[in-house]
Amino acid sequence: MSPLDSSKGGVDPNAVTVDKVTKTFPNGDSPTYALREVSFQARCGELTMIVGPSGCGKTTLLSVICGTLSIDSGSIGVFGHDLGSMSDAEVTLFRSRNVGFIFQQFNLIPTLTVVENVSIPLILQGWNYRKAEEKAAAVLEDVGLGGRLRSFPKQLSGGQQQRVAISRALVHDPKLIICDEPTASLDAKTGHHALELLKRSACAPDRCVIVVTHDSRIFSFADWIAEMEDGRVVKSCSASEYHHA
Amino acid sequence: MLRIALLMLFRDRAKYMMLIVGLTFCSLLMTQQASVFCGLMLWTTATVRNIGAKVWVFDAKVEQVNEVIPLREIEVTRVRGVPGVEWAVPLYVGIEQARLSDGSFQNVQLVGLDTATFVGRPMEITKGKIEDLRLPDAVIIDQVGIAKFRKKGIAIDIGTTFEINDKTARVVALCHANRSFLGQPYVYTTYDRALQFAKPQRKMMSCVLAEPKQGVSARELALRISALPGLQAYERDDLFWNTIWWYIKNTGIPISFGTVVLMGVIVGIAIAGQTFYLFILDNLRYLAALKAMGARMPILAAMVFLQSFSVGFVGFGLGVGLTSIFGYKVLKLEQPPFFMPWQVPVFVAIIIILICCFSAAIGLRKIAKLEPAVVFK
Image (cartoon, rainbow over all chains, first blue to last red; front, side, top):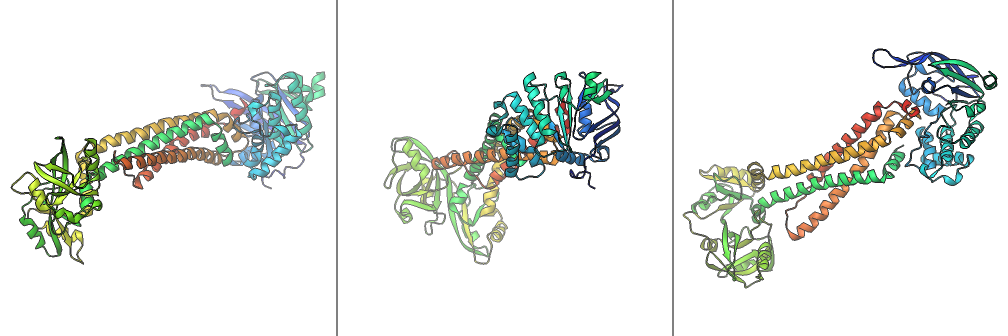
């Protein structure tokens, strides 16, 4: 089985398994611990939120899960593949096929139209430019942006940009969706709508959605919540348990 | 992704225009100055190209065509005696002063052709007949002379008279000749009459023109003639290049033009390199996002190189195009000198490619160091 084959992961209940992961950043003589032997699981078909105060290591955990940051020790399994055993090129290829990203600042390329931005993950996989745009247009239609295909990101509202970002994350049917503070740049109402859309379009039985946030207003969208503090996961439970606690 | 790369570049109009303008200016500066330099060097060889003889015989100390150390008339006979010489004729070339009908003066390059054969005659007679050169006081004047005399209010045509060193010269034909380095008009006459026009000296002949017999190469014949004491013979191409190299080695012209070309390179590197780097910096966040989404370094490198080379290509094309327009205009006016051999655009293209590689490399260095995780910060 090729570690890079997106079709081989299967419906593993534990889509993401983080085991005793430690990550430090150099800081003079004593390194700064961003993650301290963190263990964490995220399941398929669920929206998992990683929550906690600023600087607790949420984003670092997100980065190591998607392989954009290397770890010092421990192991990370994503849909049965050990990221630590892969080369950089293999991890990059794995990301392009299996991971969809929604960034805090959206990171839509301002000089590209909406449909061009959304087609990028497909083009990275070698899709023909025209076919990629057709698929991107269909996804944008689903999120209600069918009339704004040729608009540039700056011509859109924050909520519309977020919908474009969600479309870009979903267009290549990845198994893992990574969202970094998806509501940080949006007002409460628009953020609520964005999470509704994300939950509706992204959550599927064979897909895992991980959202990093410190916005407690959207905790209700989570199926599972992992709370971090000082580089450790201090609580990991279902959303209902979390709310009752 | 290459199309995406081009869209990112073309739609960032301010930077795209700045890159194009910078590289166009750089390309224009280098191409134009190199072409003017080549044109100037070509002007130094005007006499060689106008006369066109295969073998040129000078005093042994002469290094290039514009240097004249007079020879004795007997040298023609000596040259004719060298095995392999089909024919040999004398030539007079000298700068003389012409006095116009209004009393003003004009220096002219007087060329005295062998009276019998007219070897070295002008390549193109635009009005009149070469044979009329045998008429009394007859001279043929080139287009530069016509233009210079016109500026002084004298319309030159067949029948116009002026004086060369107080002796009457009558225009019997007009011709077109390659312009000389000092821009003096060529005035053709017969060898004997040229000696009458010129100020008398003990030795008057400038050089001997020779033709090799069939089966003898011009270079071989030049070697044979050079074996004669006191004489130095050159094959036409050797004399052409000797003349150019003499000017390159003995004048400040190459340094002057080289400095401007170097400035073009520096301007190109400074403007294009800096602007392209800024373009990369502006897009760094998006490039990091692409990296996070799975764009491998070779893809990003291809994107950056394509962006760099596309502006280089357009800038080079515009620069060479503008230089060509400049050349087209100045060739009509015949000054400043302009000659753009294929080596000039090739040289400039190589420099532009190097500038593009440099610009792309400094951008890529930044991208290579970029952690895709920065998109989460």
